[in-house]
Figure 1 (cartoon, rainbow, N blue to C red):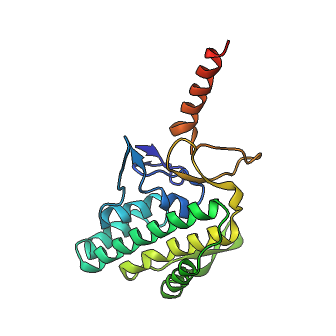
Figure 2 (figure 1 turned 180 degrees about the vertical axis):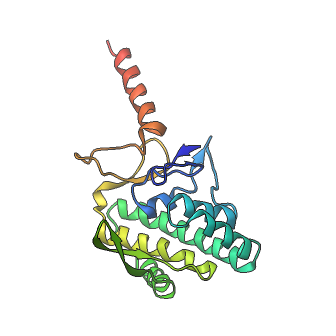
Figure 3 (figure 1 turned 45 degrees about the vertical axis):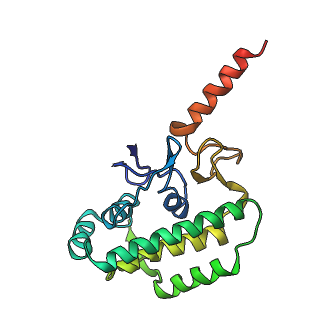
Length: 205
């Protein structure tokens, strides 16, 4: 269990990606040599959206009561899995310098068209700001922020700062000043890497 950087609440999810698309990609980590599914059911998917500050707790519970056991909820979960699997392949290839393939572009465009994000004005301290949001009237609209964040990753992020951790399978966007970070987080892999480096120095005559 970790502390979510987004909400400050305890969460079973790993918010170390510094980007929503990468945090979503990291919902299938590897532990003890085997993949672990952090989104095994629709309830877990809604819980992840709450942990990512995309759903309020009362809305999560309301949607779970309405859709939790429905076929549409199951299909939405499977669609999210499919998007994550495609995203993982695309991100790995993109990190190696490959262009996003046409099939992936077409699929993202299909999702963006079917489940668009909306724009609204928000007031804070007598100042106006513009923010993106999505209106959840059907389970499938959970795909809206996932598709949008994936599209934003490939069009706005510096690909040279998107990388897989050198110690595990998690991906992250390096926001450090030098851009030389090689591990997902200090708590998970950074300390382990530093301990290994320290031990190697001690072994060197």
